[in-house]
Length: 192
Image (tube, rainbow, N blue to C red; front, side, top):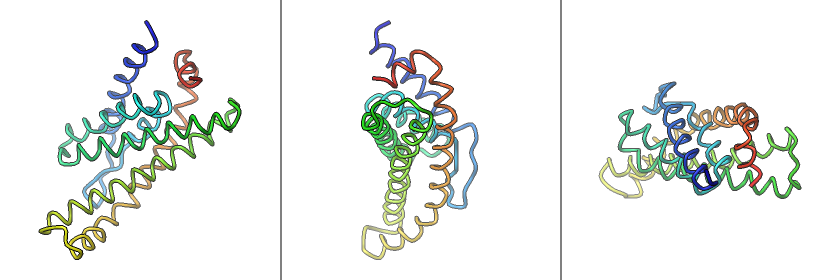
């Protein structure tokens, strides 16, 4: 099987795993959202598959979990936000790797995961805050200054929960990546 086909198959698997990880354990939040384990897979998508395939797999898997879980109004935003999260984490993981002279130490790998994951998860937190602010403003009758301010105030309540989800995602990625690196094809993908 050639590399492109292999990458597409792994992207399809990661899409399914991301969807399942997002749906399997849901911790409801007071803001009517939920904290889940899917962000760990979102970060892994970007790191393993790179910014193109990884972004698509992360976005599609997360979007499908929203659709299947009754959050269809969030699906399009989730696709964009999680794609950007994975793509950013993947790009930063690879760039930090190159600037570190391809050092393959555990410490170096963890620093790359934490750095890329942190920026990626910051995009996730910001993206959901902006989307929820827009939804709240729209629901209150329009995009007036007062409606946007009220929407931002209401949406700010979700920030700590999204940060917690991002931290859990980084931790999951830190645990799973060394395990996955034992697979020869995964090692090859990371060295590309």
